[in-house]
Length: 419
Image 1: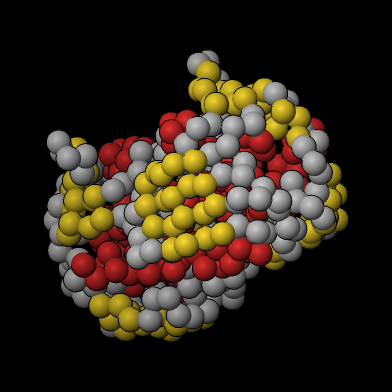
Image 2: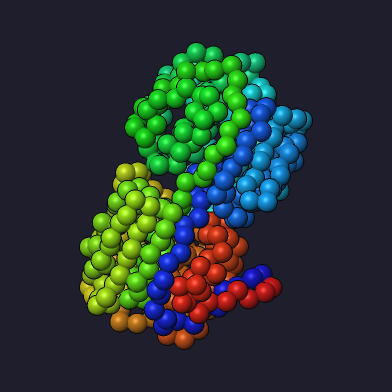
């Protein structure tokens, strides 16, 4: 199993570009099932989760090609298998996103109940209940979801709770449903807007994405598209924290800063100087002193749960105490035990992590438990004294493109160790 070795203490500086967003790309890949025309993606990130989605689509009969400019073209015109098998689905919860597309276009789907990071309960009930309201018949058999429908019919759906993948799955199902569908209490994340933009580029009729109510008028079919994946706001936020905790000075390009206001506001409160352009962010931490910042995670436009672990590290190196409250996933403090092994002073009480800032961290062998926990351990290693070895980095490869290359380019001493 590959590991990352980090020798801490280097100040990060320089410029890097932001990769395409995994959380935007995955639902778009699933949505290719909705059309029999070729679809080309630009700026698709090279990540394990993207590879897994390729494998799922390929196992169904999709044709996937890569051209000389590194653009991927996908054709699902000749799908012959409407099943997402357990051996693929078990590693990634986003696999459930093919469910709505398959039922909408082909009238049948058989999807293994999904796996992924063990960060808490993320039930698929929202997806299934909404599909039933659209007219699908749902059965659970031997660990698989089987959904079938001759023709989905539009209706009004009130989600009992905010779910990003639930919103996306039912959006995809509804674009080919007969009549109008109104979705209420939906997720407002930028990635939901991105999916809507992509579907509209294929001819879908969608209004309201980015608000708590989305209206979809079903169409008979969708066309092909050439679409560029938007930049990853979580990746950008992670590298900005890396600069902040190393008293660094970096610029991140190819990123929309206005999607990151809640993250940037907290970084400013921590003492960072931030300047934004139309598609870049510059951060400097000249005095090296970090002020503690309380955070409380919530669905967008609240503070993203995917940045919670990284801010936990930032607060651990602050001049004071802070409270981090996790309101989205009930089991997302698994990184705390490993961070404490490196010298952090963090106490978890229910959904709160009480953090007392320390003057320094010590390198240690640590083990990643999920994607964002992996990022937090790498961040801690960047400013720790001595050597840190991060094990189980297959988690980080699910969501960060060439992380050791980008950090090395900024001046970090980080090396990928072979199995």
